[in-house]
Structures are given as structure tokens and as C-alpha cells.
Image: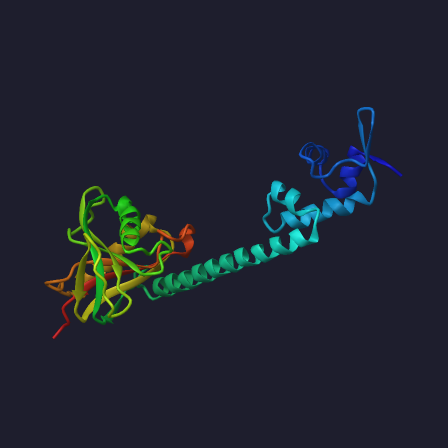
Length: 265
């Protein structure tokens, strides 16, 4: 029994146009042709369903065409998709945790974001002085990571901001990389800055850098409301715990925002 395109599409529970398109791109060819007609065997529905299954895992039609002929290819594809889906699961879990945090705060009549007071231990970092736009911070980070030879971005990056208020177009800043151990190396053109133990208003942000300035507002409001004083030698800073310079997925980025303060008497 042979089926024309429309009947075959109905058997597949799809459209005639879809079946024609799959033929045009070489994904699901008819069993044979008779004049202008495409003729399919009923068992080819199973191949269509296999294609549909692979599409459900987010594969493009071109990827499916590549992986369809061999189960060995499919094994590699599913292994890769497992990693992708695990990453997506982590992102969703982080989003759910943030939603829980936000709803809890709002139910208590608190702001959307409530920072915490944190004791920060002494640390040192490699530093390059910069000025310019907030939008250039990722470029500054890539530059200093390259200068210390960390091309896989294994260290934690940071930016120190010297201007008060919101200055997205022309800001004075230092781009830096945390030094992991006491084995400090000297690199041409790079300063080494040591930071003493201190208290800070801190908040960990998970997600894109594109709305970090909005998050900073909550730290500044908390600072003013609780009547803290800035640390006289230290300035506001961001720590890029999961660095955007080495991670293309914005939703996976982890940034700690910090306002160094003097302890209250």
C-alpha cells in the first residue's frame, strides 16, 4: 500500500507542507515518485516519529539529518543534550530560588532585594586601572585575564568603582582578578592590591549583567536606610564568581555586589 503526500501527512498527524519540506531538505524522502506524486509507505511514519522525537529535545532539522542515520551518532547527540538539559535545570532551579526569595521579601513588606552584612576576609588581586563605560567591563576583564595567562577564566574577576552614583558612560574603575593563593606573581603593567579584612553590605546576583545597576539600587537604599558609613579606603565592587568573559549563558552568571562599610559601634 502506497500513500500520497496528503494521506501520509494525515497518518503522521502533521501537515502536507511539512512532509514536502522534509523531502526538499533530504530529511524524509518518499519511497518512490510517480510522475508529480510522492509516494510513501506506511512504515515511514516511524521515521517521521523518530524525527519528531529528536525535535522534542531541541535539535534543529539540520542536526537531526546529521544524526538520524546512525545510533552511534545518536549516542553522542544524547550525551551532549544531557549536559545541555542539566544546565537548563540548574538555571531553572536558580530562578525558582530567586522567585522564592523575592516573594518572601514582598510578603514581609520588604524590598524586592534585601542585602546582608558580610565579614570579608583579606584578599589580594591583580589590577588594571580603567575608565569608560560599564558596557566595556567584560572587555576589560578579558584583557587582564589574558595578561595573567588565564585564557579559560578559572579565576574570579572583579571591578572596583570609584565614582558615587550611576555613571554608565564615563566611570573610573579598576578591573581585577583575585589571586588564589599566597604565590603572587608579577606581571608587566599589572598592579597587586591587598585588601584588609572588613565588613560589607553584600548581595549575590544570579543572571545577566544587563540589570546589575538596578540591583545596585537596593544595596544603596539599604546602606542609607541603615545609616552605614563607607569604608574610607575601600570602594564599591563587583565579584564575577561565574565570569561572563568565559561563560556565554547570561542566566548562569553569578555576581557578588559589595559595599565596604565601617562596623557600627
